[in-house]
Image (cartoon, rainbow, N blue to C red; front, side, top):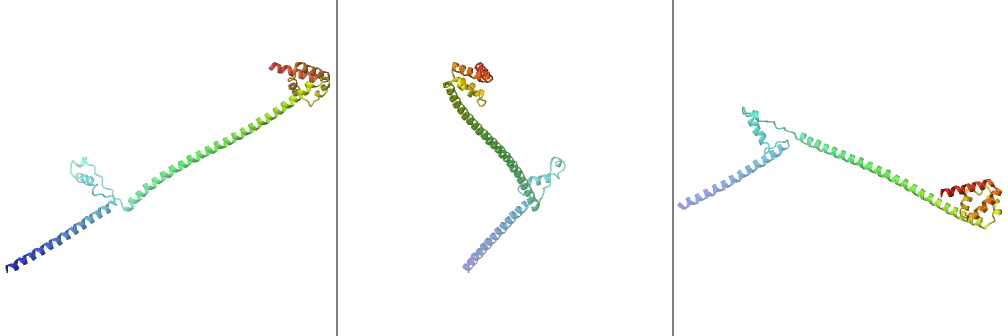
Length: 225
């Protein structure tokens, strides 16, 4: 009989332990559900710009604003509650404003680059024009050099011919209009003074005017030297 009572007590203890364990797990599940629901609601309210963990100062200000004499020292501003639509609209407007600013910066940069490109193109055109002018000047110098070399060769040939010819016989030839005074002056200056004097004397008997012009030019060139 005593053993049966003991066994019954043990069974009762086991049942009680099982019931306590079940109740504990149920309580934990209920607590977990409430915690999860609380987090869910907090997250949902944060979408409306309501933050429980950060708005305690506002709540404290709200309470103290109801106390006489103290409320004059407390500045309380009601929380601004935004709808999800308003919140995302504000965010979109801010983002749009940033995009506009970035777009203006890019447009300004593009304009600066366009001006820089135009300046470079203008400078390039100037350089090309300068290059053409230099090449043209070079061609002119080469042409003048060739003409001068040819003139010197002809002048040397003429001077040699004058020096080796009889002045009285060449006087009619050099009096011809096709033989310029400048050419004769330059040729005579390459000869000795005696030879040049004989040729001028012979020329004066055929064309005194041309001989006088040559003599005058020879004198002026000597004065310049």
